[in-house]
Image 1: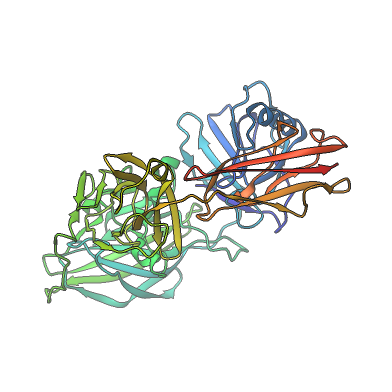
Image 2: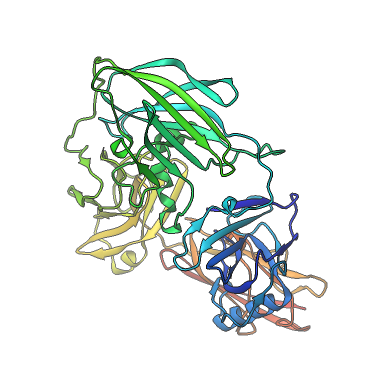
Length: 519
């Protein structure tokens, strides 16, 4: 969606406005962009600067004022256009590592202001030298008579034959399906860099006629989850390489693919002839590489295909369908699936002492979902009203887990999830724990520069955290959702103070703890 710009592996490098304009939006959140600025420009573009530390002094003071007005560290602000005008080159903030960032850098984007569509910043003439063509690593072939999630890609190595021409090994590939599609494993870089960056464009030609292609430009954040329909999700989730598909799955809405000949990128080989395949990969500086091979359809023994059964029904994209058993139901909406696939179901007893239902396994982790689907579970015993109020649905998949507060209807508990896995109902009556970091009740903090705490929960999910100092809300930061930190300022003058911290978990269990300290 943009460019990650290096900051010499350090934070607090000065960030300057790319062009004249005004600060239109300010966003602060634990994950995602962390601390971010949006600048609108008179030519109809917006630039975004993310993972920042402090803004310039005027902006920082105004943001702090707004946070205290809203009594929330997490904010999304839209100052009036006249409040913070900027000129090209003005200092706007310091770079950082906030939010979803995993190392110091600046995330930079260019968007159309009118519709918030992201444009490729490398198309705007940045001073970057790039004489290096993209590198092609591998090629994948798929049987399009089957679900993309019910097969393993045939992955072929490639070799560079000179210049920028690659060939697949072997050069003549025989397939047992009359309908196939391709994927490409490739990366781009630029002069003097070893970074493995994304490619800009790829086009597939069949017998020298353009069949399908994609270009990384004009993409909305509303569509970024469709990345799961653009890559070979099953291969990647199983620990395999990145493969970018050169075909369009039926559930991929607002696709980046341009189908010029092959419908959806499906290549028809039913004539049994030998067909030349050429895949061109480009960067924004028009450096390009090509991969060539030949393919031929030869009928062979069909591999076993999953068949529909009572606990293995077929679901389809762009259709609403459901599954119902005695104590479990699930419903998959029109925009959940990218391709048709069998969704497996299995019921087993729960080993958790907090469980009040069986475990229900639905689908597989290698089947991605665009939108959340509805899971309904009936408990295995009658719950009291208090137990119902504290019931959550636990999702697990491997080492991952999440809980959602359920909604009740006729003794059925329901919740929505955007991943398949195993689901069960639990009664959570354990409140979160507030843990002070580096101080105790009654501490002398006259020489300290900050005070901090963390929150622990048995299901690692807390909300509604509210710290107050002497009865008034106090701004604690919570970058990356970890430690809550308050740096002493004018809101905590010298003297004795009382800090009260309140927190809830997903089930609604609440806790409050009060500390005294001297500043």
